[in-house]
Image 1 (cartoon, one colour):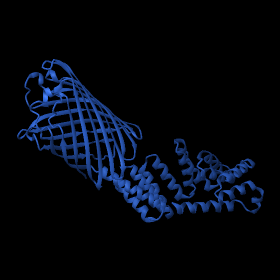
Image 2 (cartoon, helix red, strand yellow; image 1 turned 180 degrees about the vertical axis):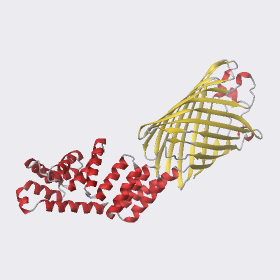
Image 3 (tube, helix red, strand yellow; image 1 turned 120 degrees about the horizontal axis):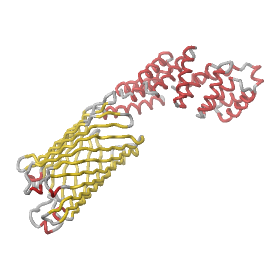
Image 4 (cartoon, one colour; image 1 turned 90 degrees about the vertical axis):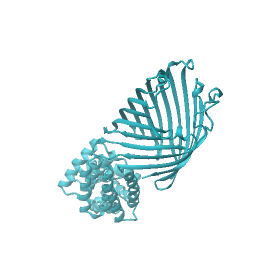
Length: 508
């Protein structure tokens, strides 16, 4: 790119020498002074002299040409286009101005400017004016319009006609493939741009883009595997009530150490068209030192989300199934849950995303209730509204509100639930992240509890502090502390808990 720019600048200066023979130079001192200042890169002074030259002779294409160039150098593209347009329409026409005009119109970036640029490209092709640079500029315009195969063809034509365009054309081809989501091709083109001139500034840019492409390729692999093993310490495994009236018996050794394991498979194929698909399977287990026959569990979860991408927004059908088994003493089915409904996601801006879900949720428990009023089998409405803010590289903030209307078979568990949560992840260093989250769950039960002689009201608050250190590629150490405070007007459900966890997580 740099060599091409130097050659082009020399061409412009040679043009100036041929445009003005000795006799003509003495007759236009403003024009000659403007060209001299332009050659010295004193663009403000050049503008002053060249503006006077245009006023002196409004039909001078030479003054229009260099005044347009001066405006282009200070990135005032609208007046630059105005003067360069005169340089190619008045007589005598200056062919160098045609290519400059095309570039300025491209930089303006407006639909009308791009359409005008394409008209001038046709003129340049018909007259064979600087074909390599015109092909390169055509490629830039086609890429901006999202016509990536045609843009690649134009860049290929540019470097085949003039080898000095090879590196910058390879770089732009790489960018075209990135935007077309053909990442393997993009990576090879950035590598080609680096090899053409490894010490150039453009090679440095190509290396940075190559690194980004490699990371994006890793993220866009169809199958992702996450493994986790954690040691935990739970200060209240049994949810021992705070009220001594309810905690006097049956809650010995409520503290326990445990081992938590998890496996998650994410299947996210990348389609060229607008269709979307996301599938996930997760297996997790928790195995306690104390009360293992009543509190150890194994959970399986399946979810699928086919969808359609409309551009700024996407619509998915979200289906999730959870199956939970408890040890007692063998593993036995404890509960299962199904949630299904449409999920709508829209990009409010480049860094802000809004999600809305509304669907059905059903839950069933295997153990028969002691009394009919305790039957927790349910069906009902589930919905949530979520805002995601990507406020800086590698960091995000998520605020979510969820509403659930749970209609249970037993009268004592019918409730309305309001769940507000906030999560933030902040990178403190390249491999070290801080994670904070908070949640407030408000549940108002609909029916009178005949045993406790009141309507139950629960307020559950949870806060979590965590750190993640990626000490090896795709392998992280994770440490977390979580505190739960459950407040209830029925003392049996009023408790507090601290949970400490530390372990290792591997992603592939």
